[in-house]
Length: 395
Ligand SMILES: [Zn+2]
Image (cartoon, rainbow, N blue to C red; front, side, top):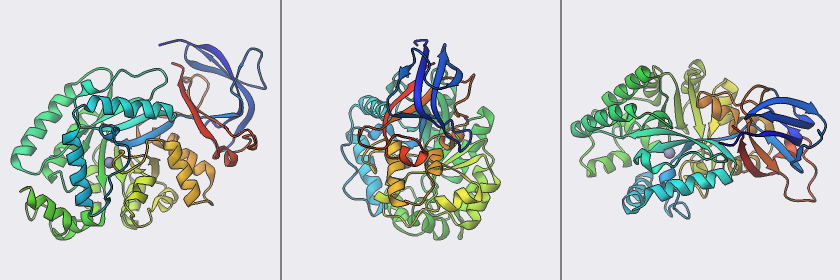
């Protein structure tokens, strides 16, 4: 990787460390590290124009294998029908490596610095990280309901955990309705042994809640058709809280969606800071779910990150577009709240602190105001009108 000795002038810098923004500063970098932040425009500094620098954007939940899709699946419900479409798309995709590469390239262009992907394909499908591209963290998907599937998934997990090298890893037991409780326990145990994070879809649909509580509904019908459902897998009255209780033993947990978590469950998350929510705003909107409790979660002290989910439910993989969508839907929300979710909260869910600090790697996302008539970026408020320009990892 290139080593930079460079100075970059920025009209606006939000380090993520506090709510404060710095104006008219130059960032001095040496050998990939930020070594100083000085007032004004230093001689010889690269001028970034009407730009703002923020900590790198983080996509905390994605399925890159569907990145070849031009648009989300036509039918969003019933959810079991949508799942059928994803399974078909996976079967029909003869070149998953190209889809994954396309998704990574798209994310790089969208200024994403870190991306947590649910991996179903071989690790060989993932290219080497590029300087301007995101670091991809691989969460091996785990699905198993029958004795045979559970046994083979246990083997898969053990061999996945031996994979060494270029990626950071995690496990992704898919969802309560596709992972038998004993297999989930196994994932938790392995995550403790290997000190790896878990990622799980939880409380995503009302159908999932019905399956847990009553053992009925469209998801039970779908699994029965495949001969995979066993009545009594969950005792009557099971709730997402019971799943959260199992997951809480893992060192770190990312919960994708959490659309239908109730107050008590949100409090449980607040009491377990190793558990994080990944809210996927436009995917949530696509499925026409009830209002997401992300604001109550944040107010309770839960760390809420943002994800795009895959292109089967979202038109693109841009986290900045998630931010702009939220700003449109919730015009009164404080900009810093959205910025945190898109950057440092995502990093926290991945076990990192990416606030911009002297002595740390020079790794950030740059936003630029493309419309020349727009006001200069002097505050976080008008920063939200900006376009993503680039993610620069100057390591
Ligand atoms: Zn997902």
